[in-house]
Amino acid sequence: MESADRNRWRLRPGVRLAHDAVRDTAVLLHPEGALVLNETGAAVLALCDGTTGTAAITAALSRTYAAVPEQDVRLFLAALARRHLIERAHG
Image (cartoon, rainbow, N blue to C red; front, side):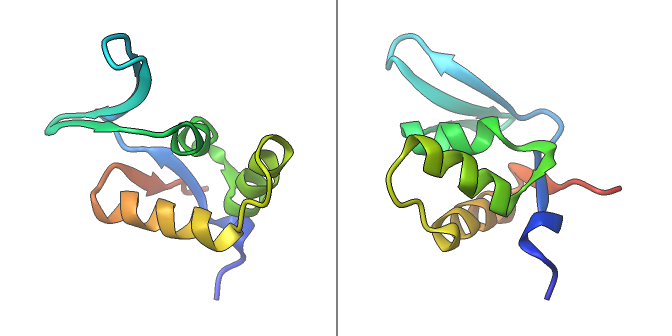
């Protein structure tokens, strides 16, 4: 199995993280619509820059939030990948 730090993620082309002023929350905008995010979800996606691995994302979140299980981060990222909102960075 591939090391968690080799699983580096980035937003797919046409997808961007934004702030919805009406809802006063983060949203993930994509061609088919928008996904409203909670604070933690937005923090995860802000780190999906194509260079940060899953373990590093979890470590960064753990500095802000109490007890962030890496498995939860992996499951969240996998769900977004299945929806074609993020992709693995290559190289």
